[in-house]
Image (cartoon, rainbow, N blue to C red; front, side, top):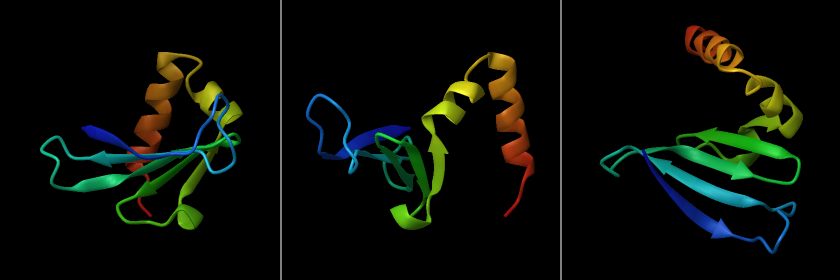
Length: 84
């Protein structure tokens, strides 16, 4: 994957507007989505989804998911099996 910082509205601490990362396919042609890192957590926006309609993840929940490799693998497997 290729990841770009689209906007860098940060001083020392991540503020409410946060940091926007653009995620593209390895060849750089297709936009996979955008990830926003804010003071409250992460927002994942698949494709051209707007930030308001993105999937939100609190920092506490991210810490729980990343507690162990086994927990993270189980969460990823469950997400891949779920269809919207």
